[in-house]
Length: 261
Image (cartoon, rainbow, N blue to C red; front, side):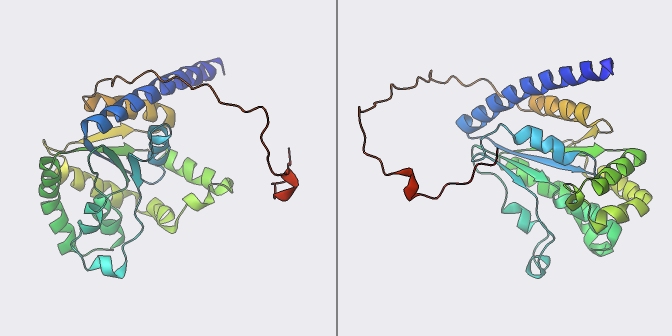
């Protein structure tokens, strides 16, 4: 128990320090007009969502967007595969986090039969070129794959079943992934073989321990972005100008939320 308390104490301290660095990094991105895309991929319940929350919770949401697209519409299915993702790429001074991405085609779409073999092969062949185009446009592209063991995934699925606030996280696709563990493993290996390039490498995050995975991933992310601290003017609160008497309407004129606590 003591070891767990010590670990949690170190974790909270480390996360607090990383949050400060993430804010510094974002200020630099905004000032310098940088464009960053961070892809989070991995098996279901691998801990992507928790890490994304830790990355974004202290950042300015006007300059940091999380994109988690739903299944494509009938119209989108007729478009160039990458088309709907292009619309979400960042402008200057923006960080875009993709909670799953165009790599759906090499994962769930391949394993569940939602794309044809021709579409799958075409994706593997053209994805590296698409990413080179993104990078050459001035966008820094960073890709993380969260790796979780079969045993830990089952534990996390069961915790979602047991917690009514987390049931929504468990989809039919998640349940089916239990039966298709090997197929997903083969799809991942093939995806890495074709898309882990020198220009756009994959970084694997071991995530059986969620807290360690968050610290490791965020620390690594910050190391990839060559930011520097932005000098800001000192902020001073002005003295409030208070009049001796101000005529205000009576509170009984308004509807107030009842106090429960």
